[in-house]
Length: 341
Image (cartoon, rainbow, N blue to C red; front, side):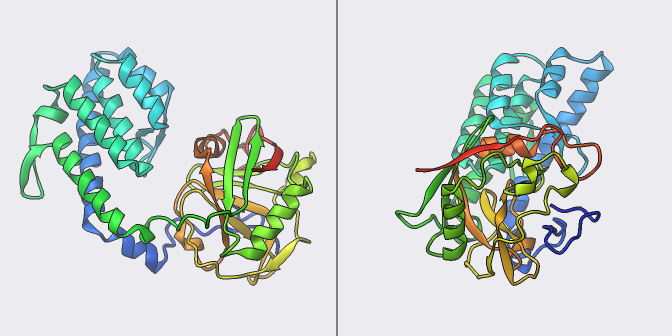
């Protein structure tokens, strides 16, 4: 996540999200994803209308609670975003209020973003049960030639998308690591992150990480760069010190040759930083992604995947950043240990 101010030979420079590979463009063209997006946006248009009405009468306390527990994201930075559990709590707490049904709708949208289709459908069914006369449930729209409510159309769309993705799994996730692959727990004060390495597909990278973990190399290093739209970076020995200007520049002495692991940069993957040349990887610094980043395919090596604790990664990535624009967290979190499982 290097910024233009840090383009040293060993820095990690991530391409903008807009620079999509042909692979990502291909995925984006499938109609079912467009339908799901349309339904979410349509619901959001109705939400914004109701919000404006509530604000015209004076700010609703229920909307205040939604705002306090979520952040505004999306292209226009106006969509409340949080973990599904947060919206589930709000939906229960605010049941019967102006914002109550929208908390349930936002819970479904958050689950959809994590591709938890069955849980998203259950949230929408709860919405129908709790608010049978709400516009999201009762008002009908013409969607894809079918007249139904936004909620019913979304439920149908979720089922179609789940079935489509199930038959095209290779487009949406890397294969699971082979049985017996090395597993580690990255421990932090926020919680543990469990990772599994692809020792069969990225043998040298996995071996280097395993060796460094065993030697305590990562202990007391910090997550030195964060970005909710990309992920977190860690593993720089310089981050143990107080000279923050050097964070993200260390570990250049530990490298392995670049290798094509055949794995893609999906959310939750571990990706090695690029070395002095594009044909080598640093075995110290690595990123954990919170979003798919296929612009990095062919540039960096994926060598592992998070198998538990993505909620901790998202908390790290969404923390407040330093005001200097470097992407450094305002209150850096350290790795206290990396233990083999």
